[in-house]
Length: 405
Length: 64
Ligand code: HEM
Ligand code: SF4
Image (cartoon, rainbow over all chains, first blue to last red; front, side, top):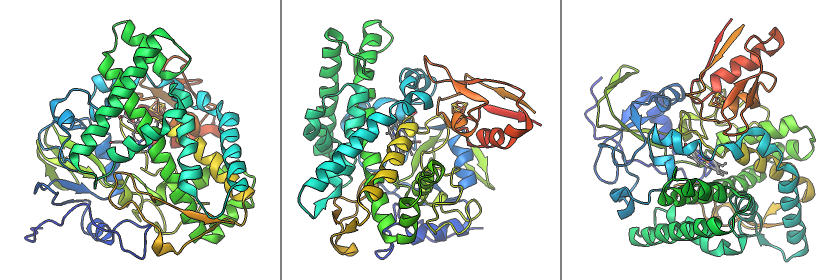
């Protein structure tokens, strides 16, 4: 079918009254066809993939490149100078195999299921201590600052061997890095600052090794397997991805549960680890915080769902709407903690599927099974429409969440 | 049923271990998946099929 109207602008806006739902225009596109054209900030018109099945198929297809210097790559905004030079890039997330696989495998060991599960008592203690502090402090309190951000920051710092006392520095720069409203110069400066910070840390691990992941990377630098700038890039990726995402899932997840009291009650009144695990999957699906889509460029022509993606064209898999695909999930717009949501694409799919997912799951399981039981009267301390949502960020969430009890 | 696992494709996501812990495990050194058995019994069938469906690297093949 020939469509002679101009492709719609992407990303689209959410409906003000439904802060947990993807933009309504995405639903319309999904109803039309699995793949449609959209228009980006730079006037380019990549494909937008809106259905679950095609998203999975394409994300598993290595003819699509994740490298942002591939021709046709759909950039989310002006490229940072460092990105365009290719030097000091942000780890392997924007690389293709075989180099992506080589680097990823250097850091996969600590994210294996059993290694991560062994951290449960330590994470439980972090969560309990922060709740103790909150309960002893003034009300209302900003849940983001007091709880949602510190939990994953403390966890990833311990895993990497980054001193948590530097959290003002790396949290501030991370925030800039994933924001779309911070000017490009400032974002570049934040990236450089983070890169230099990680580079210095890796240097100090060379002289003073410990049992953290950065120290293992430093050893590989010493052994000549890994360039020091790549090691620093991987460090930046793990540090940023390790706390910004999970923090948003904690705060936005809590807000979503407060708006769905029946679901919150289910979680609070159950001590079944299976329900807790299922709740985590459902909230990942329902909230899909990585809301600007998985972005790729076609290296060859690809035939799919009756269209041909040409080599050199951009492709965006909008996993937020993929997770609301009615052919995959019944009543997809309902938050239902008891459904089997495990096939969601909130962690992506294919070789770039989230490396930190076992850790994110564990942190969320501990948080969701502890916070509402220990503070059963937890409530929002302001109107829903007074809460600042991260519409402008690469990762969706709330900037602040004032709560009381 | 018979399972084959392509370790070269595996990206160590751990999804298979979560889905079917009696059938899949991960290597200590790099988290790459290993089979605990390639011919699991019927009781594991659903879990194994689920593991194959969620494997992001499409590295698991199941023959019934
Ligand atoms: C709930 C929290 C999280 C969500 C929703 C999430 C989401 C994602 C998504 C969608 C991708 C795929 C990117 C793509 O295909 O283009 C990804 C990749 C990645 N994530 Fe996460 N993530 C979370 C937590 C974490 C944590 C805790 C860590 C680290 C400790 C982490 C580290 C990474 C890394 C290193 C990659 C790149 C993998 C690769 O390119 O091979 N993430 N994440
Ligand atoms: S699910 Fe697939 S990619 Fe993940 S560990 Fe198992 S075999 Fe490897």
